[in-house]
Length: 554
Image (cartoon, rainbow, N blue to C red; front, side):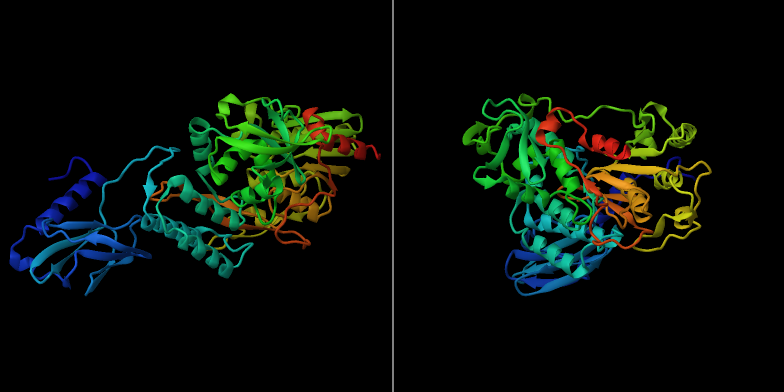
């Protein structure tokens, strides 16, 4: 007779549970065949994989069976029970149970089972848990996190050697020696992610922090804006700290030191700091400050007024909804793809994304480039400004396509693409081969506007343009590395006990570029142009203005 429905996962778990119970109501003769170890103390240590749990198990002869559930995630590993006089080990396989007996004081028979089957618990996405997690569970999460990185992250050792990262992993693991809530343990995870220096390695922690602190905690009630090595008030509702005030220290800690410590928990490629700086400027400072330095009711702020006076004030923490204000940091809002002609001899091509999913108004990237360059050529434009600021990337093919409109020569784009297990061939990705220029490509002067938010595909495109000396770059260093990135397909893993999710990129890309001075930096602009705090408040686009003057030969 055929089954009408396919057994579900829960059906199989139920069957396994029934079989487990049946195994413990067999005749005593069958039970005596189980492996047996001895003990004279009820306290038993357990080593589960790499996690050693001292005093984890208490012998209970009355429980038949007394079940130890293997720490998640369950994979092939060794589990050892240590009594005060004996031990037993099993090389466990997921989906199986392992039965044995611990004979206590030569008279009490403790029927014990190691089980790899446990109920699946559903957790709410992006919900913070305030419950404390025991050290052995934290270590189990961290070990799993490390193993996933080592197994799947193709660019793990791009910027740091294995020996150096091994020391970092070991140090963080050793520090997990006390119970911690989820967000406290998260500091170790984010510290590692920042330390491997890969901007595509991510987690759900930014969202967790914003959701939790935004609703539950009072925070530092000022929008801080960093320019070079200084920090300013972008906006606040505090009388003593109006916009443009320079912040010198908070609670007697210099603002430069505060920024340095916060940078240790922000991901970016290599030694690039512009992306981290942009992250703080875009509203992350308040959340990160509270997370790293702790919740406080008030803050001592040392500041410098616009008139140059040094003063100190004490301000109270507030909920974020009570101090939100217009930060005055938005430049003129444009479409994601836009062509303008600021003067008769100059075209301005704005490209805010290479990602089809982010394009608003059903814009088509290929059609936009084809139409734009046709118009640029027809108008006999000699100066082209390409504004890439804020462009976080997207499809690799669009980066190569854009460059094909800027050259008359065939060019190389990617030198290699590989995962931890294989190397991508030309047949699998045509961007590893020779790329052809467009028939109507632009041959005039090109100026590129870049900033710390230029990442991934955008940085790759800029690398090719820089390597081929195609134009001048204006603004600040890109957030993505010159030599390439680790991206493409990603895998997302949830740490079983802390419920922190990690996104790991699976492909390491190397750009086909000439050698640069540093191997851990982005595209360095020919002209570093940053606004003053006054210019930020007045919405002045100093980088575009500089490019327009340069186009005119001034």
